[in-house]
Length: 628
Image (cartoon, rainbow, N blue to C red; front, top):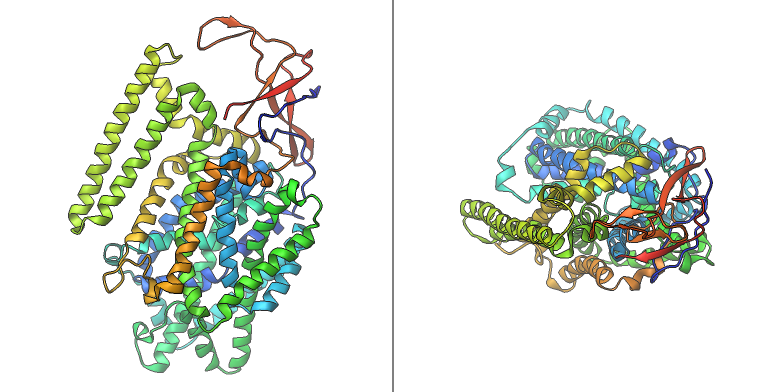
C-alpha cells in the first residue's frame, strides 16, 4: 500500500493520529492474565465477599451478585479491556480519545483507585508494602508480569490447602450449609443488598479504577478482548466462591468448639477473616504455622492489588508526554508511591480503623458514579459530533434529557415516597409518563427537521438517534480487538447507566437502624471528621468529571502525543484533489474535498497502525477541521 504523507493543521489542541511509539508489552498473554487476575483477586474475595454472604442471607446474596456480574461487571470489564487495547493508553487518554471533554472520566477512576490504595495497604503492613509495591511497578510490565506468577499463583495454592484443611474440621458441614442456605426475604427486606452486590463486583473485578484499561494497553491490539474479560471474570468469581467455602467451614468449626450457632459468633467485616481464621487455625496442631501461611496468603493477595492501583495512575502519567517527557518512569513511580504512603499514615492513627471503614463505604458510591460516567461516555458520547451533525443538537439533547430525566424522576419517587408499594408504582408511572412525553417531543423535532429539508426519514433518523453511536463503537472496536456481541453495546448504552443511577440513589436513600440516611451518618461515626472525609471522596470524583466537561483545557497536559487511532472529535479532509460527491443538504453534486480514510495496516506480527489512505494518488496534503 502506498502511504500518504498527511500535513495537518490542528484546531485548538486536538490530538491527531500518528504512528505510535512501540509500547512495552507483556511477556505473554499468560502474564497479562496473572497480573489482571491478581489485581482482581484480593481482600474483596477472601474478606468482603464472605462477609456480605454472612450478612445477607447466605446463598441469597449469590442472586444479586451473579446478576451484577453478568449484566454490569462483565460488560464494563469488556469495555475497559477493549478501549485499553484499542487506544493503547491509560484511562485518562482512553476517554480523552472519545472526546477531549471526557478526560475527567479517566481522572475520576484513577483517583478512586488511588484513594482506595492508601487504606488498602494498611490492611497488610504499611511501609514494607510500599517498598514492595515500588519494586513491583518501577521496572515495567514485563517484570511485573513475571512477579505475578508468584504473587498470584502461590495464594491460589495456599487457598486450596486452607480449604482442604477447613473442610476436614469438625462442624465444617454446618458452616457450609449456612453458606449455601438461601433466605430470599433479604432481597426485598434489605434493598441495600443490590448496590452492595454491584460494589462488590466493581471491587472484585478491579473495574472503574483504571487498572484493566492500563493493563490492557500493554496487550497486542488484536488480542481478543471478550475472551480476556471472560477469563478474568470467571477466575475472579471462582476464587470468591472457593474462599466462601473455606471461611464458612472455619466458622462451622468455631461454632462447634464454642457451642454457639454461626449467627451468634458475631463476626462481621474485617473480623470475619482476621478474627475467625487465626482463632480457628490456632487450635490446630502446629497452629502457628497455619496462621503464618494464612498471613502470607493475605500479604501476597494484597500486594497484587496494591501495585495494580499504582500502575493505573503511572500509565496515565507516562502517557502525558507533554508533562512527563523528561522524567524517568522510576522517578514518577517513586513520587506517587511516597505520596500514597504519606496519605496512608492517616489510617495508622488510633482512629485509623474508623477512617478506613468510613472511606471504604463512600468509595462504593464513587465506583458506581465512575461506572455510570464510563458507560455514558462510551454509549452516548462516542461519535457524538457526527450524531449532532446528522440530526441536530436539539434532537440529540432532547433524547438524552428524556432517557435520563425519566430515570431520575423514577428514582426520586421510588426512594422518597414513604409507602413502599405506592413508591414502586409511582416510580414506574412517573418513568413511563416522562419518557412518553419526552419521546413525543423528540419525534416532533425530527419531523420539523425533515420538513425543513433534512436528509432522511423518521425511521432512519430514529435509528441513528437510538443505535448509531453504540453500533459504531462496537464495530470500531471489533475491527481491532475481535468480535463483540451487539447485546454488549445495548447493555452499555441502555441498561447499565440507568441501573447504576438507580443503585446510586438507592444507596443514598438507605436508612440506618435509627431511621437516618446512611449517606452522611454511616456507622454512627461523627460528621467531623469521618463523614466529611468520606463525602469529600464522592465530591472529588464528581468535580474531576464536571470540571473536565466544562473546562477541558485544564487537563490537556494528559494528552498523548502519539495515538494509534484518530480522536473522535476531528474530521480529516484531503484538500489537494477534489473528489466529486453528492451533498446531503442540497442534493447537488459538489467538489468539496472528501474525508481522508484511515485504514489499519499490519506493521509487525500482532501490531497494527492507522495509516491515512489517499482518496486519490495525487493528493498531497490534508487539513484538520474541528467539528466538536
